[in-house]
Structure formats: C-alpha cells, structure tokens
Length: 219
Image (cartoon, helix red, strand yellow):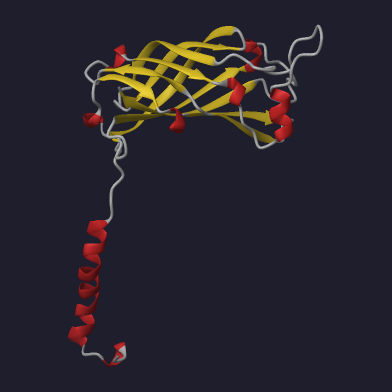
C-alpha cells in the first residue's frame, strides 16, 4: 500500500470523501430508539404502569456528611391522559414499601424491622402496607413538556398532599409488545416525620428527595 505522503494530491483530497461514503451505509443502518420526547406521539387513553421499568429513588443526608440512596421498584398504577386536555390527566400509583432496596443488607433489614413490644417501629416495620399516590390536580407547564402533579400520598398509614415536578420523557411504540408507551420523570421532596418515620432525625435528614421514573403502556 503506498504511503500517504507519496500519494498524488488529488487522491489525498478525495480520500476523506471516499471514507465518508463507505461509512454512510453503516450509519444509515443504525436503529433509532422507539421513544422520543415528541408531544405529537402521545395517544389519548388509559395506560398501565410498566412495573419492570418504573422506579422511585429516595435520598437522605447522613450525619451532614453525604447523601445516601435507596430505591422502590415494581411500581404499579394507571394513567388517564388526553393530549388535547393535559390538565384533566389522572394518575394513581402503588409503591411496594416492603420491597425497599438499599446497598446495605443491614440497613434494609432495619427499615423493615418489627417494632419492639410497646414501641413504634423505627422505620416501616415488618410487612408494611404499599404506599399510594393519587393525583388531585395537574398544572401543565408553559413549555408543554412539564407539569406540577399534586396528589395525596399515603405512606405508613398517613395521608399528606405532595407535589411532583413531572417532565415528559418520551412516547412511542414498544417494539416487543407493540404497546403505545409514555414515559415521565419526576422529582418531589417530603418530610418523613410527616409520615411518622422519625428515627434518627436530625442525624439522618428529615427531608427526603424523591427521583421518579415511570413508563406507562396503553391498555
């Protein structure tokens, strides 16, 4: 093969074009993700949460040094939505507290530790009831991609209003089951003491930050 320095100048100039032309078919064959953040893709109707891809992460501060993370999975629920009237959307989800996950087996066990005789539980206790969130109002943002979803959160036997800052993440058709699918991200902040989860405050922060990701599939 001739060295590049010895190739005629016209060939050197043509080489990048030839390489680009050779790569073009490879680029054209690369698949695209089925979901896109395009409001025009949203199909009106009733949806069911895809439990395998719906999660609620939580974060608390530990001793003022750093944050600690945990996770609730297997989130189930429903969404009714009409893109022509997003303010009328309704969402209801169920969060299995008994399936809480952390990076520490000891902490996970403590979160689900039964109450001592005559004393309240430190955190959730053994076999805790599922938490639920049922929307009461939806205020769409001016950008058409976000909304403030206010609803009643029931956790540990206590019901309090919570507002979620939600963002539309994507819509499209699931390539495996062919279901029309919508995805959303959300953030919220609550005080765990409002839900009678007071153990360790203030060494472990009362404020809990939630990071939510939910996919819904059309029924």
